[in-house]
Length: 136
Image (cartoon, rainbow, N blue to C red):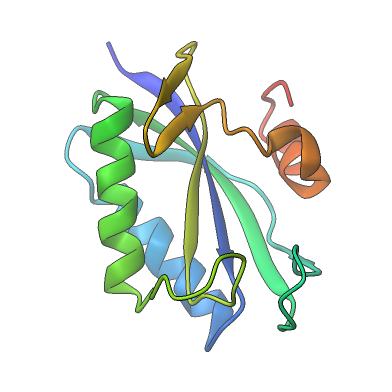
């Protein structure tokens, strides 16, 4: 039986809307997965102290039978395909995909924490989850 995962999409480099669209298409093409809903896209100020432009953000709900780690690995592959380079923490990026929630799973292992530990600090994620009918 599939689980319901919530994935945050963000971009502040290049054609931001195109990066989000490419991410939605790539998520829909994942094996054993399908995008079932997407929030509105909103522009937000960057977080952290690195000077950079504003982000476009969106949350998508994905039904999947992938494991949390399998889904995270797929997200990282999608980011790289969209030109993501991890050079500077909190730096600008073509695409950022965060696994915010994954069914009722609670995961705490190297490189993967679910629910995402920054969820309480990101009001735009909370708004987007609420728009999708999920509990923020």
